[in-house]
Length: 194
Image 1 (cartoon, rainbow, N blue to C red):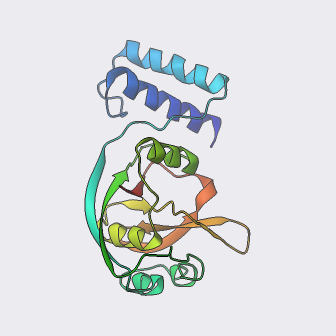
Image 2 (image 1 turned 90 degrees about the vertical axis):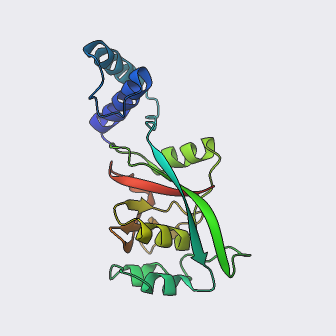
């Protein structure tokens, strides 16, 4: 994350904190903007981890068919060429005890409108008492909500041959994957289980 991206993350979070706006600056007064800029500059100067701005989140219920393999979940809808090679049971082993058909409640956090790190999102999920999703959950929910770029910060990311940690994502209903440690742009949403 560049210094400017860090400043923007601090600034947006400060505006939300001071005036309860949605972080888009539409409702903030000049005095609130100056106060937010001072708070952001101070946070950046002392090297704090940028905060995760408050955003609307929504809850949903989804049914996951664990009697299907991860490969069958990938094949059940659109998927990138590489998703067929990388989103496999070998790379993302299923936790023991997940069998049959399961209906669960989920929360989608974001999008935030600014760069966020995986660590920030996991800290926010912990604060809210949420749990990491499985790759299957990410695919099912992401395909049901094609308007989202949905990231699944799974419990055990796959370590690819280059040493990168990889997690499943669904973009416009298409299964894909991305690198866990690069951070996430402002259009990303994140799936967690209640």
